[in-house]
Image (cartoon, rainbow over all chains, first blue to last red; front, side):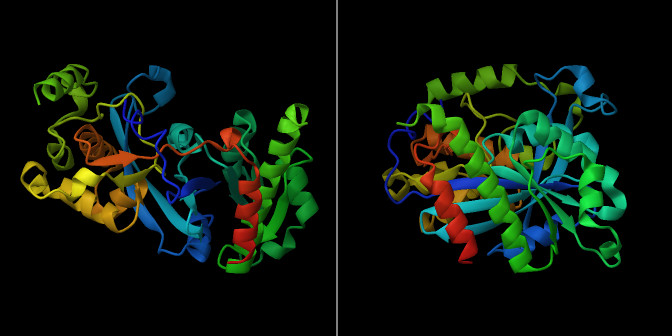
Length: 201
Length: 135
């Protein structure tokens, strides 16, 4: 087992790594959002997915291939020497949703970036995080002309649970993206606190 | 080494993608393997940290250029699987196999990221919030 030797021997200097996912429709500004706060230029990496171990109907539409390559963009924020946050832009195409399972595993939370003119593009992501119980925050990216969509109407159209944070944002602006990320972690913290409460002294 | 080969032999027998067509070049570096020897898939944010043996003279001969580069990159600072993949411009799957081999050879070890639900102390989330605000 790969982790066998490592897990119990963590040196004090080894950073804790956490990840936040950035999901949303194609072209909604996920990589822009990552780039606005990342200390490195967003990097692109390719993940080759194998259908091994998955039921065939999980890969509707791609049955003829046994592997699929998808690209992910990610950035890094070193909050401290020993605390590093990674942001992963999830693939925009819905048919790669099964990649999210791996990405989502162990994620601190997620941002669903929404284009108010194409709300339906974000449904798959919202649905996914709701079902998996992953704390997420909705950020409505202000595109040119997007101001004509009032927040409450957008929120209602997305049919979000009341506790889901909902923010207007600008994926190009660092301060704006910071607020969205803070909202994600606060939401995760709140949930974590309420889950742990019964065990607390 | 015999042990390793036998183990890897079993991996080969478990190939799932015989129908995938011609083997693409990056996987030539892994001798065709698409999965490492470990039970767990290495997480994208798992950090690769060099072991003392990585500094031994003579290790170079046994390693492929890509593995050498992984060891060197991690020597300056721990690198995540995702960063290594992007840095070496190789698919994540290839990096997983190459790193898995380095783990088997005790040249590096890999941290296991703690899922937030298992964090011993949720104070770390407050630190993340403070850190983000201070950016």
